[in-house]
Length: 342
Image (cartoon, rainbow, N blue to C red; front, side):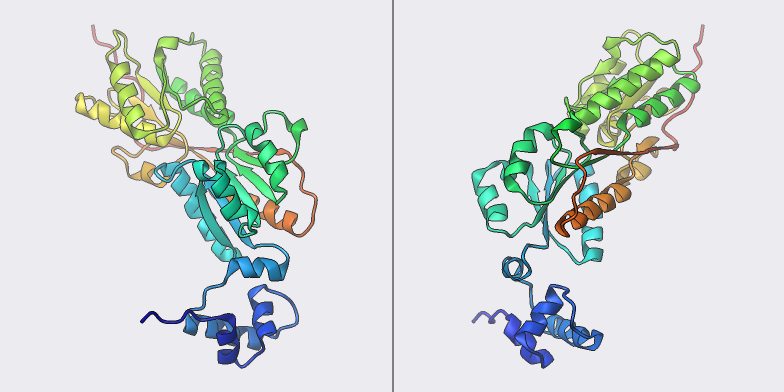
C-alpha cells in the first residue's frame, strides 16, 4: 500500500505550531521567530513534505515558481544556462519549472503551467525573436525577462532583456586571430537569430579593420549543433585554398570541427586554428582545450532573477536591453598560421 503523502497539517502537528504558522514559514512572511522557523523546517525535512506551489500561490497572492523556457534539452549551452539558473534559484529558495519552447507555444502548455497560476514569473532563454513573443508576454501579464536575446526595437517595451556583448566578443576574437597572422579566417555560423547576426558582424568588422577582404566562400552555415560544425569543417578543408583558422559561432560547433580536422590528419593548432564562443564547461576539456569567448553566464542569470524579484515586489522594471561584456579565453586551439613552403 502506498504511503500517504504528508500534508501541511502534518507538518504543523510535528512542529507543535498552527497551520497558519507553517504557511507563514513556507511563504517567508514576517511574525515568526527564528526558533519556530527552524522547528517547522526540521519537521518539513523529517516528513518529506513537498510544498504545493499551486496552493502556495493562492495563499501568497502569486506563485514563487519561475518558468524557465529553453530552446531544447539537448543543447549544451542551454544546459549550462540551466545549471546556473538552478544554483541561483536554490539560493533564493525559489522553485523552477523547465519548459521547452514547443510546450510553451502550445495551448496545453499555456493553460497547464501558466494559466492555473503555477508559474508566477517567466525567464525566456535565447528566443529566436523577442518581438514574436511580445503579444504572448503582454497577454500573460506576469513578470518576464529574456536572457541571451535582445529587443530589436526597444520602443516596443514590455520586457527587459539581458545578453552578453555578442558583437564585441566576436570582434575581439577575430582581431586576435588576425594578430596571430591569419588572413584566411572562416566563419561557421549559427541559425538566423540575433546572437548569430551580431557575431557575424563582429567577424566581418574585424576583417575590415585588418584590411582583409571578406570571402563569402569562407562562411559556412551551421545549426549550433556538433554535427553541423563537423560537416562545415569538412567542407572548408576541401577548398582549393582552405582557411588557416576557423571561428565558430559556438563551442559545440567548434568541437565538432576539431574532430573533423583530426580525422583528416590535421593538427590543431599547428595546421589550422579553431575558436569557439560561449565557454561551455566542455570547452576547457576538449582536444585540444578550446580558445573561446566567455559569456558572463552567472551575472546574466543573477540579473535576470533580480529583475523578476523586483517586478514581483511591484517595482516598475524598465523594458530595456542590458548588454554585458565578454572575455576572450586563450587556450591551446589557436596559434600562428603554418609557414608556407616553397
